[in-house]
Amino acid sequence: MLCEKCNKNPATVHVTKIINNNKTELHLCEDCARERDDFNWFTSFSVNDLLTSFLGPMSPARSSGSIPVVKCDKCGMDYQKFKKLGRFGCQNCYEVFKDEIYPIIKKVQGGAFKHTGKRPHSQNIRMRTSREIEELKRQLENAIKIEAFEEAARLRDRIRELESRQQQEG
Image (cartoon, rainbow, N blue to C red; front, top):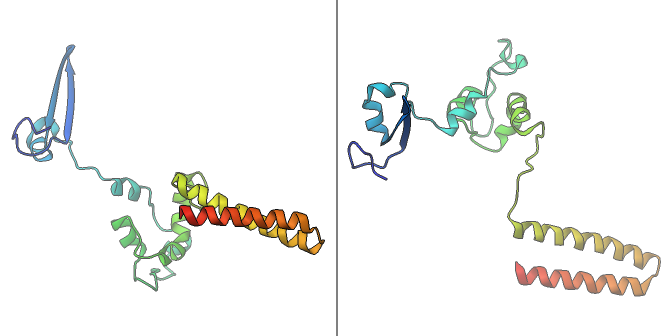
């Protein structure tokens, strides 16, 4: 949908006004919306701004002034630059700034400092199969130790079947 005012840019601001049970809708681009007096509250929004708003001052241990500003020894990122950018410079930053980011992650993720997000379904199946193979290999070792050779042969065949299926899928 194009902006109703300039008819050039895509409409990214959609406003519905209801005054005295009279409904009007406006579809404008950001530039045209900024020009309107009744949209003087309009500011662009970014997810980065939202996330960095969670970042408060540094931890008490590091903000006391007696400890120098901490920087990542791999990429040179400091906490103030992280707050401004909303992303780290490298994976080492997660360890360097863990005292600052852990409280934020705890709030957002419900306490877990470990990613527990979703994976594609096919990856879950591969991981489940890999775990099953590892468990069967442990059982096979035990079966051989106690000389349960029929059970060992059954486990060996199941492992081969799963590994073969995994190679065909992967």
